[in-house]
Image 1 (cartoon, rainbow, N blue to C red):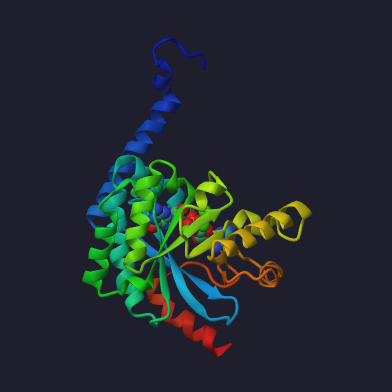
Image 2 (cartoon, rainbow, N blue to C red):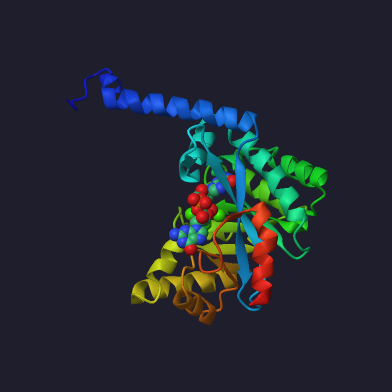
Length: 275
Ligand code: C2E
Ligand code: CA
Ligand code: CA
Ligand code: CA
């Protein structure tokens, strides 16, 4: 029975109850995983399309729960955001990633995702700089990825945070470009070092004229904002060739390499040098 009464008795339906229980269990497990420092970071290569060199890695959070199952970040990141665990999770993973990045070559950037709610935290720049300082990683080696949605809640504060990060030498990338709340005049207010074209556009590239035009418009917008452009989700050579011919700067995707644990990074780089 799905009829809704005046009181929210729909909550007491068995499937709803099961869902609430599952979520509570997951939240408890996530809390423990953070307490015990059991979350991991994997690294996906970013490739300079002009030289073919790896110019950095994007850090991607990974969690294996107590039942040995991989919980996808699209599940546990929103949970961390809703429960306020995101700040702890962020700090823990950034510390881990900075340690890993220190062993890479000096030209390689560590790109780290930020949740939109973190752009409402005035202390964010100080938290990040504290972690970088303790790890001994120069701020120039860090890039922060934010989505358009991170700029909506409090644009003035977002701008202030971005200015602090920028002044410290940290780079800022606009992630998932083209999928969020896209108010172009608002976007122009913010300064980005990079703009990442969402992988949904890559999947359709070369297939129809409309998405072709959209891709071109995104690239030219990126150029006029003086940002470098990254294309994400490149899975085959055809897609790569397409974006290279359109003057895209950086590539990311399974074609170049999947996200891998820190210990596999040196081997990955060595294998690339040989080819
Ligand atoms: P994202 O930032 O857009 O990251 C790119 C996602 O695309 C990653 O999924 C990556 O594994 C996947 N990907 C990379 N190349 C390809 C490809 O060629 N084809 C396809 N189909 N997929 C590709 P993942 O690791 O599952 O992460 C999902 C999302 O979770 C991320 O999307 C990001 O929004 C969020 N996330 C991950 N780690 C963190 C984190 O530490 N903090 C925050 N706030 N969010 C994170
Ligand atoms: Ca990202
Ligand atoms: Ca993305
Ligand atoms: Ca995405």
